[in-house]
Amino acid sequence: MNILVVGRGGREHSIVKKLAESGKVANLYAAPGNGGIQEQAECISVDEMDVEGLVNLAREKEVDLTIVGPENPLNAGIANRFQEEGLTVFAPTKEAALLEGSKSFAKEFMKKYDIPTALYETFTDAEEAKAYVMAKGAPIVVKADGLAAGKGVIVAETTEQATGAIDEMLINKSFADAGTKIVIEEFLEGREFSLMAFVNGKNVHPMVTARDHKRAYDGDAGPNTGGMGAFAPADDISEEQLAFSEREILQKTADGMLQEGRSFTGILYAGLIMTDEGPKVIEFNTRFGDPETQVVLPLLKNDLVQVLTDVLDGKDPGLEWEDKACLGVVVASEGYPGSYQKGVQIPEFDSVAGAYIVHAGTKQDGSRLVSDGGRVLLAGATAQTMTEAGELVYQLLKSAGSTPGYFYRKDIGAHLKKHETI
Image 1: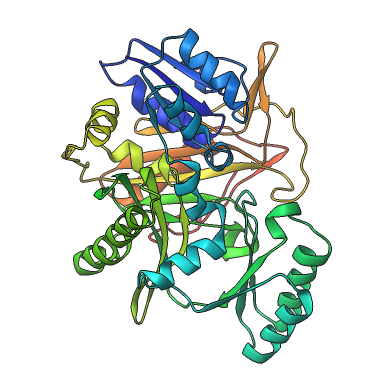
Image 2 (image 1 turned 60 degrees about the vertical axis):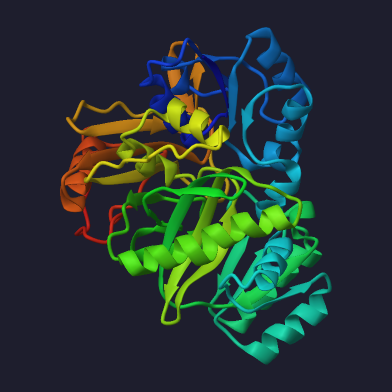
């Protein structure tokens, strides 16, 4: 098969790496790809938001299957256009992608279909929102309604922080159109975890659990990011809790979307939190999570091409998983998630058995690989235990020595001690 992966991040590099293992691939393309993806796929400089350009590319290269990574083209209707042209695409339609594209839609959907989530209210007026915050107190969560690259969520520990976030979103327009409407919801206590599934209509095929670390700095300090590291599986989630999450959250969501006339095909990602009352939904994504994908796919035993083909054909792919642990640590540009410099030389790492590097924000600059984003690389490893996986990852990171222009957390993984760098 000729396969096209749309996107340029670490999620897409992980997908490409897994597809490259398959014997079912004739030609593997990525648009636009990145400096690491080019090692396994032919990168073609068509922007992920250039839907017509991607349709033309799929026709020109006689692509049999297109996999869409990022959320923005999904919400722009890329799957709809591919379907109109008779091109096979593994991705939700614009109508289904609204589950991620609008937090207010998602919250209303969960309320309607009795899917457990935090209590909430939606606002477009700043003064009304502030009055609600003052009445409810803190901690409280303020979310931009639309897509904000993983940064539109403020967990406010004081009412002052919450009112400041409201001003930033509704008055200062810091998230542009994504913040013209906001959702304010109760703060939930508990352990967060992610659960992704391959979905087609009512058919739901869950993956292993993962846990992402959102805060920028050690000890879960600093601002929220798109993710500074992750590990899989989250082994403190019991079989009973997992079964509940699959039945009462993933399956109810797939069934509800079908009832709404928004039948879902693609990856359904549930960001969950284990509360005293059981698992509840923090957010939905309608694509592979990043960086979770970078630690989940390495544990998949199946041929990913066969999995996607089976799911699209309405068959059970019979998912099988390695009985191992996988952990990854993000190497980010100094200053992320705020302003940062691009074009910084990528660190060079020694080879460590069981460890790997995924490229996220990188590009080729002449003969050099340089940074091209906030999250630049992920150092990952699989091993028999989470502790061993963590040791391999930090061994790999230390092998680069000093890394000016970059930083990474030293405490990813619930089972780990803090790792000191050279």
